[in-house]
Every structure is written in C-alpha cells, then in structure tokens.
Length: 150
Image 1 (cartoon, rainbow, N blue to C red):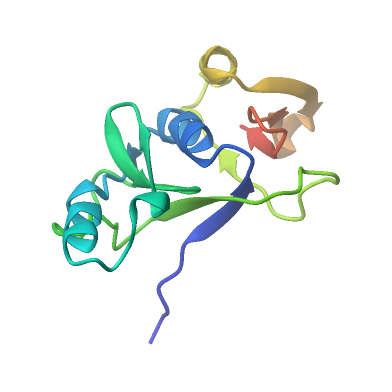
Image 2 (cartoon, rainbow, N blue to C red):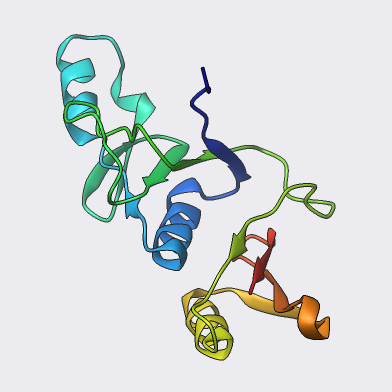
C-alpha cells in the first residue's frame, strides 16, 4: 500500500512563504482556525501557541497549503492529499537545496509563468535551454529556495 506524504519546507516566515507557494501553485492556504479554537477551549494549547495572519488564527511558526481539489478534514482544515507544510526554524538557508519543485507552464507559456512568479516575489537565477531536451528557468522563492519554472 502506498504511503501518504507531505513536502516540508524550513522557513524564516512560514505564513508568508505559504502565501507565496499557494499563489504560485494555485493551491489553498489551510485554515486551522476551528481546530485552534477547539484546542484552546479544551485547554490543550495556550495562546502562546497561536498567531494571527491575514485575519486568521494559525499555529505559531507553521502554515500549510493544499491542492484545492483534494479532500481535507473539515474540522482541522488539514489536507489529505497533495500538501506542503512550512515550519519556522531559527537558522537561515545557507546552501543549495537538494530537493526542489518544478512548476510547469502550459506549452508556449513559460514567459508568462516566469513573469507571474516574479510578480509574486520570485527571482530569476538562470535560464537553461537544452533545445529539444527542455527549456526552463532556475528561480528562487522569497526565502531563497531554488525551484524551476518550465
């Protein structure tokens, strides 16, 4: 039986990075508000475990995004399919990623995709043109994580 998984990013600002990637991938930012309220009311967490971002209550130091067509738990807001979690860590990024995301455009739409990603806060690093083998841009998200736009 195949296992469920999620991709986890270390981050300096988890909610902001989740916002970037939700917009880049056209995913939805998870809303754990109902779960947070339930845990607070039951005394299972304190206010120190909670933050606010864009008018929503979130778990301090964490944010997640999910594919809009995948199932999710109605109570917790947690996705049960394609999902990316962002967790804040004290240290900054220092070396090249060993794993990265490739964001694919529709055929002939690479320039539009790159422009959209730049408008969201990504930066171009270098263009790679391998002729018939492929053409893409290596880019960085707002925290410097490398990814490719193809």
